[in-house]
Length: 239
Image 1 (cartoon, rainbow, N blue to C red):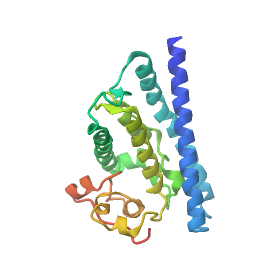
Image 2 (image 1 turned 180 degrees about the vertical axis):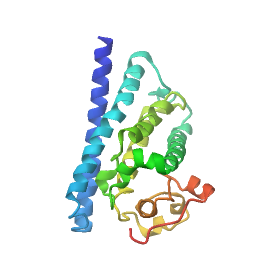
Image 3 (image 1 turned 90 degrees about the horizontal axis):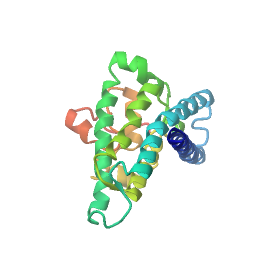
Image 4 (image 1 turned 180 degrees about the horizontal axis):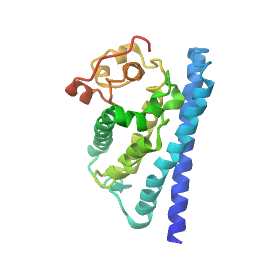
């Protein structure tokens, strides 16, 4: 019965990840069609490939997430907590920032590694086959690349305490930024993108340049590591 419960948890998480992807990417794909009619009208075959790879990635993300969710519910694994007073209230907003920065750090260095020729050909080329990327490309990864992303949050919940609601916020930010950064056009106001705050955040116009030039702008949420390592080449004029 234990193995059945674990399997069901994995299947449930896979379904949740897949539905979350379809809902988020679908909403922003419709927004793209409304704001820029015909922008991706000739990319039907590419979009179908993106959806196929992304649904495969959903299973790879769902398996470790389902195992951890089962362990948390049945045995108290992880440092996820539910009582608001388990940690000081000032820590509530700090925990998501720690998660996002840790995820961003992992993503930057693994992403940069995957741009080495051998790793690129065997793994990352799947993602860059989206030319230009669309809202459906957010999880369009080769299975090995998907695995590098799937382990991050399940690992962090064993290390960094976080309220379950704040964990939900992290997942929301992951989903929205993953989709909006691949739309090929900038949906956020120019006043934000070109502000001091915006100069440290990654949006579509920053990530679009990565898809155009490959050897730059490797970050996921923040431009910190790109700036520290000299790989930040600014915003794409085409987004």
